[in-house]
Every structure is written in C-alpha cells, then in structure tokens.
Length: 84
Image 1 (cartoon, helix red, strand yellow):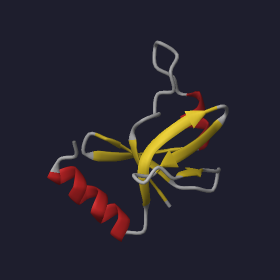
Image 2: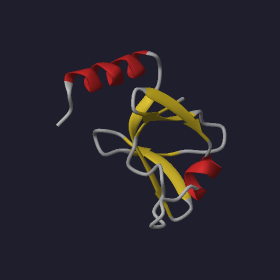
Image 3: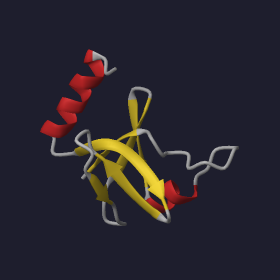
Image 4: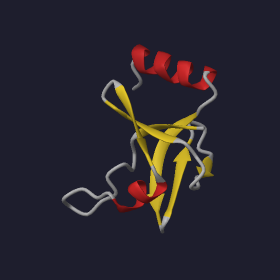
C-alpha cells in the first residue's frame, strides 16, 4: 500500500525528470524496477539516489554492489530509488 505522501513524492520525482522504482542488485548488476515491472539496468554514469526516510542519499554502482547487511544481503536492494 502506498501512502498519499509517498505517491506525491514519486510524482514530484517523475516531474523532475527522474526514473523511479525499486533498486535491485543481482549477479553483479544494479538496476531499477519500475512500477510496471520494467527493469532498467544502471551504469557508472547514472545518478542514483535512494530514499532514506525523508531524505535522498546518493550512491554509486560500487556502493550498491558492495554494501551488505550483517546477514550478507545487498543493503540498498528493494529501496525506493530515483535515477537520472
């Protein structure tokens, strides 16, 4: 379920020219899965930001690939992200 405030933030991101969705990390690749299921693979030149509470945190491909939880899972996978 998406709250109205989250929907408004996503709408503002799209209007600002960002591609939005959920970040995924698998098999050495990083991408963003949009609401319609389309997967877009990302590269070093992409400007990636993940939402951390009410602020956006910029990350690199290397950070997305190497940052792990204490259990060993990709730290940023599954988070709302926006990309330019």
